[in-house]
Length: 161
Length: 290
Image (cartoon, rainbow over all chains, first blue to last red; front, side, top):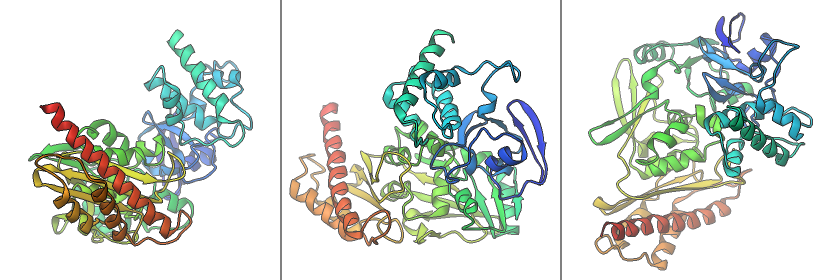
């Protein structure tokens, strides 16, 4: 089937989508957007988190056809500027600086989810950060540096809204 | 596989009549797992995301009618004051991403004995509104909705429209056992709801029998035991007995998440604790009022 979807601000038409495939598969395998990662395929790990109409969701649990006519924003859509001259989103920049990235597999999901948290709650407490990231698993970096990154991003966004 | 995308409730009912084998999909948090793992390959998916009525809730005749597609995050945020038991259960579902998409209607459609919304629906006397194009609306009490493991009372041409339940007439609590505070399928769970005007206690037991169920003997015992007029303290012996009767209402199995014995023990503890919290709240309410 055909799916019409706006991804990172660009209206796209995707053909030959299988009716049972996930939004994640469509993004990665048909649209050349491998930022969202494919790990558990059951919503357990959060590494495929994307915005769907502005609300974070596990792309592996959204049927591709459900994205028809809707807006998706992936980790690729957070930075501003053109390729080669990008300005990372403050959340991305904070993850780099805080050393919150090791193998990097969980990072795109954590960044989208943290981005949403700070949008909704500009000064989250540690408990609120932990709660917001409860559905994102990291198996190597460790969560302390990830928490550091979220705190840093929140402070910066507050200083330069 | 077909992908059906009705724009209205009437279209959705027509599609379900036309293709009874179509599997309704709302948040996708259950349905897509089964498809991703090839557990289930339905003839068609019936996407309900466009049916706006399903994501609305309203108050009608003093009761709440919650659209089947209202996601957990909104049950927590918009209905938490009126339905604390259901909101507490909703807060334990999956993760924020799952709660943004998952819905009570989906929980009811999947009818897993471990579904988190079932115990508070049972404790709060919820009624499930289902509908078919040919036979119209049927109102099914939650107590009659769950028929077996992942089996519910829906006919093949029916869809779940809404859940009806009264705003909490008294304190409500939900408790759940799992290995962490997120992404946990209940080892077992329990909900309690006080109905002070009816001098009655409602219960719901989750993940401890082929279906979610009420602990009827425990309800009857404690309803006569509590000092509804004087709001006197709950005796340890009564709380203990209530826990035992809840335990006896369960028929759990040993599985990967826990043993039957553990589930029974945990249920007795959760029943005792949640009842104590609820009754203490009820007593405190009077003190505040006076």
